[in-house]
Image (cartoon, rainbow, N blue to C red; front, top):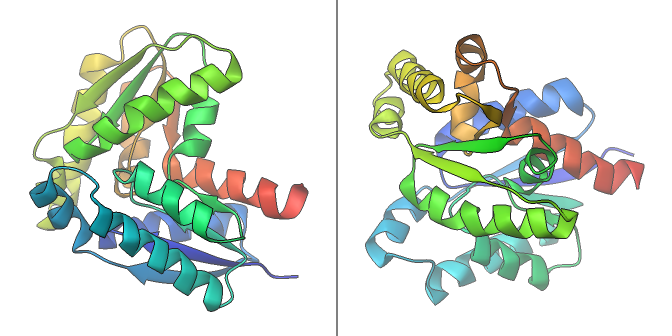
Length: 220
């Protein structure tokens, strides 16, 4: 049976990386894209995930399920508590973009260098990393790194500059790290360059998320 997966995005740049990850690891899945690209700006203006943003996530999840989705994957990393609300509102598996990657990261040896190009992502992910470590019975030290200007470069079409800024930041901060984690789907395109610049394993949210969702729906 082909599973239908709804992919909910806050950035257009998240679409290509997750499509590539599905093509490689789960090509039989049927994908449905939902985009609300006003979310990042609304979050920055609100300063937090407020009740209005949370309700939008619930409605997006319900729409996806009403349209036949067997699972919902949110690709927007800065909205953790809103995704929790969406998960509670529907009966199908709902995954945060980073939970599968964090599950992998907490089992690494050494610090986790967590890079993000959207500052609210780090505020959302740090408590999620602590929770993942606690659930696994592991001690975890996360080194958060905000890569300034990279997202603006990507939005303007300067994709090589975007990748180079991320790789430079990784090389600067990855000394002694157990793993380097790229926090956003839009950053996955920089992974090959990052891997050439650092010795530690490099995790991306799309690859981890597809593997994690497939385990829940197919292999469980």
